[in-house]
Length: 307
Image (cartoon, rainbow, N blue to C red; front, side, top):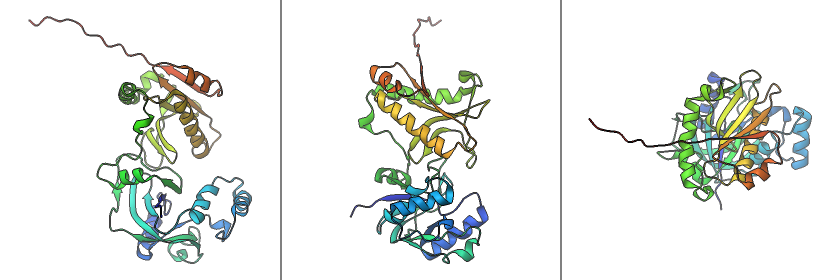
């Protein structure tokens, strides 16, 4: 059996007093639960029924994949990371019973306004517990899957949740240089973008949008226009194949549009690289909301006399 790894938020971490009550209940009763109580019992729905129910209730189907995974993809033996907010592992455990519906299970704990009726039984491990990181490492989705290497990086001694695979790096020298360039851009952001852009600040964790974790990857730099609040996804090429970085930028833009644009904001992309090759040029012809800026590094040595 192939073990799959899941990240699940057991409750809204901004409602701190209830979060602690719910999490202690989960630990004691070996369970983790998710909401969408307005849908009623969806445990036996097929894909069409579930999609239609979500559309009727919420006017969109954004939560379909999460609920479908919860009921149909998470299996006994899988591993679940319970996250608190976006920087903390609350606990880790193994699934002992796949998803089921029970309206009453945690009703008394969370109250009628907050109870979660969809449950998976978990054998919670003793460690890790309450493991906090110095940056955002989790996406905003209530439920999403991560890879085995990502899981190991999270629970290990030196976690780096998203690392660029060696085989994706086409130019290693460029990769190293642009990793440092990213830090330089962030440190000098105001001067470089002349106050037209500001670094996005996550309202939940109060951290800036550098290496901004999502459930579809990590955005190099996430910014907003000072005047409009529109979002800009900034990606450095970092040695990757040119057309791949365009596709990745578009993926992140779609995620930002879906998850962060709550007031009609727009999203555009900005790729920063040393030059544009034919692959990138062809890829960019098919979109009008991704622009490219080229950087230039001037490094010279000068003779000097020691007196």
